[in-house]
Structure formats: structure tokens, C-alpha cells
Length: 284
Image (cartoon, rainbow, N blue to C red):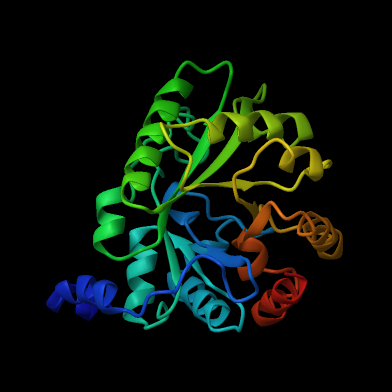
């Protein structure tokens, strides 16, 4: 891959444009199963108890290729560097590709809430023949930088919609701890509030999908919107069976149109990627 990037970088664009694209956004099971791998670009490398689990790029790519090869896995959500590695590895034929757009709010920084759009832009996503763009939208009621992210996200939803592309918005109500760490509120009320704000961005929601965490009263959260919802995986759970039970219950709601899971699939507690993927496919 390094030699190709040095000697023939234009091959990456050709591979993106020439790849076989998916027929739509319904997925093999009737819903989408997307593997998320955009964490490294925000400096978030932790998975489970391993602080630098996602730092080894060859290991991460190995896990991604294995996950994408399993029946029922529909695509990937990632930044350009990872998407292009997967293109060079031939792993994205017939796959849904969602480009990660705002990675400027680096994990653990004082400017984390100022989540600028430093990744994919709508024009590039369309030019490469990908299916949509994803944006993180953290709303801190006490941080005056929040409106900047809201405004930028609304503009990106608009530009994606103009091109007929999915705008996947991942909203959270967030706050700073006394130690200064930015954390997301994973309560039912916070999930409802963030979902309703995200759904109202831009002058159209025709192509907007929400990427939401699974919280205690998920039916109440899903009742707050008529937009398609992707469930997010979040951190690797110590009790995976309990986590799977919560996901399974949420999947019974027809508003849920799929799952976008990263570390829980790629770095499961038993380190068996294929087994974790197959369990999710069976659940869906």
C-alpha cells in the first residue's frame, strides 16, 4: 500500500469510481450493518482495556477485512485513509461506504466540542461514488462553541441532501466533568433531546438518518422521530450478553433500520471478530 501511494496514488481514485456499488440502503437482512472505524482520526484509539488497541493499522485493517467478508455485513463507516486502504485491499466491492466528516474535535482536548469538518466533504463523497456522510454532533449547553458545530452540521446535511446522499447524524447531549473531560449523557431524556435537535437540521430531512445510542427506554427515544435510525455500538462492554440483549430489544422497533458498530465488533472481549459479527447478523 505504501508503494502504491508513492508510485501510483491516482489508482485510489480509480478504484473508488470503478468499484461495484451496492443496490441501495436496505442491506442483506433488510437493515444495514455497518462497521465503524473512524475513531483513530479523532485520536480515540482505546477499545476495552487497551488504550492503543486501534493504533496498529495493519491489525485494524485485518479485523476490518475479516468483518467485511462475513455474510450480512453491508459496509463501512470511516475516514479517507482507512477507506482508501480498504479500496487497495479490494474489500469494498458491493459495499455501502459512509465517509466520516468531522474529526476536528479531538478526544481529550479543550476544543473537543468545536468539532470541525476536517474529513470528507459532500462533493468528494459524491465524486467517489460513496453512499453518504456521517457527522458527530455533540451539544454542550454550557459551551459557547456548540452553535458552530450545529451550523456546520446543518450545512453538511443540506449539501449531502442536494446530492441525494445519506446524511448520518450522530447526536449527543454532552457536558464537562469537574476534571474537564467531555462525556456524553446516555439517559433517555438526553437521547430524545439530541435526536429531535439533529432531525431538525437543514431545510430538508429527506436524506437524514440518525445514529443513536441504546439507552434505557429506547422505545421512547424512537417514538420521538420518524427518521431512519441506526443503533451505535459504543464502547466494548464487559458484559457482552447484556449489551446484545439491549440491542436485540431495540431492533424490534421498525424505526431502527440498522446498526453501525465499531469496537464491539472489531475488538470483542474474546477477540473473535467473526463470531461477534455473525452474532450481530443473526440478531438482525
